[in-house]
Image (tube, rainbow over all chains, first blue to last red):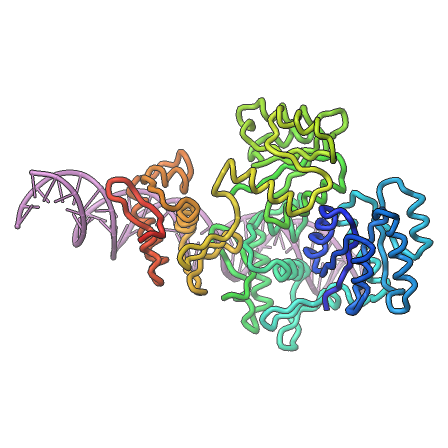
Length: 229
Length: 229
DNA sequence: TTAGACTTTCATAAAAATGTCATACTTAGT
DNA sequence: ACTAAGTATGACATTTTTATGAAAGTCTAA
């Protein structure tokens, strides 16, 4: 089940940026630019969370928050306020009205997602980090397990992260350097060729049911995870 | 494969946001937060583009732009300025100093990427990572695949680059020498006739569905990729 | 500290790609 | 039809890239 986030902001660029970040992180975004459209989104299926710009024209941000907190069915939906830098007063008022947290503009994607995940985790602890499945190969970040046809596949931490990265970024070549950046982390001094070894171990780990075919070598370019064989 | 973007901004959240958007779009980002670190990034391998915050402390944004436009080797690297809303004056000055375009904060990811792609396209027309399709022959640089009617076509790295070049420069004859320059790279000592062999390999690779007709010999001149048969 | 699990690097095998040749074909002009 | 120049093609020695096994180094939990 993908988590729906309602994004309320009157400035289109900021709204699009929020939506982009959310979608890249596996969330589904619903947009609203003002009081009316925000209220319209207050129907089933309800969003799992609301990202609310505090500085909506006419001070309607606070109205929206109140509305959400009034209704029986939307009361427990967490709200994160977006505030301009230094508007401490607003933050206080926002929290009074029922906002669960706030993020100061400008925000980094990392911070934004961290707060969103934290807030959602508080409400529905198990719903985050859904499992991904491709061709019967299933990776579940919550239980930190990889299974295939019910049987668990054993692999090291690096292989797990590598597979997780691949499964969340399929159909795309990555050079060894890029994989090092994304899976090992930036500025880590490790040989390019080390990736080969982990690719091999990953393949070996998922080979029993033939899933090693999903991890493909692209000569001269790198590796790719693809369900197209 | 050009896709390194130098991001210069003193505010970490904004910088992170830019990096996030860039990386999600397949670019590689290099970060710099001030004049010094920006200048440090002015070495090989040079970035293919610079995203420069105009409002760096001490007005050093303009200094950085000047520095880039002064050096022989970095002069042609496009620069996109990030300006605050409404600073029309700055935009003008920026364009005078040599900036190629500007983006107003706050920006949407779509707009940002559109401008970046436009600017890079202007400089190196073939570097962008969009799938191209001609007559059912499809080349996707992202997944690094060539397909025809759903089935994948297998070819070596050189043939792939050659086809990519052809598809991005259709309806135009290229001499063997020109092809060597564009596909193999400048100052590479390789026989002219070697091109023939790779043309043949490319044709063989895409022949199964009859696409070899797209790669045409122009006697006495070279080769041409054309959908007009 | 020590066993055990991981990682990284290295050496070597295996596979694939590349650049050249020699030779067979084509084409245009005579 | 014949020739000369340009092009296509198959073969192959070499060079590059990957795959893989194993050694050496790290880290962690008991």
